[in-house]
Length: 145
View (tube, rainbow, N blue to C red):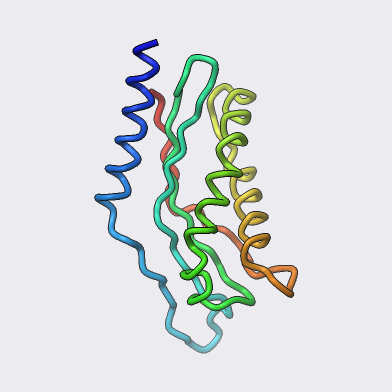
């Protein structure tokens, strides 16, 4: 019982420390060149999600996402980043735990990217079907506890 409490406290402290020490990532906008991509890119702040199984917290997943924007402005994404991050955490929390259990603790990147893309378009796309063309996983750190 006390071990579980200590693990939960450790996870919360790790999350707070990660958010406090990492600088806010600014939106990056590549310079327009002839023949360059029509997409704009926004890198979001790192996200930390604990994986909880029957024995408590078994892993901590930390990832950084960049969105490849199609029909949406960088400013709108920056304005909606808290809502987008919350939606990522809500969607990934249960999904990652179930996926880790099914695959011996390993996560499938294709499933994570597909879900993040679906959530991004649900939050950001208003009139069009697709506001985000692709989700780029810039960092994915999976640590067992």
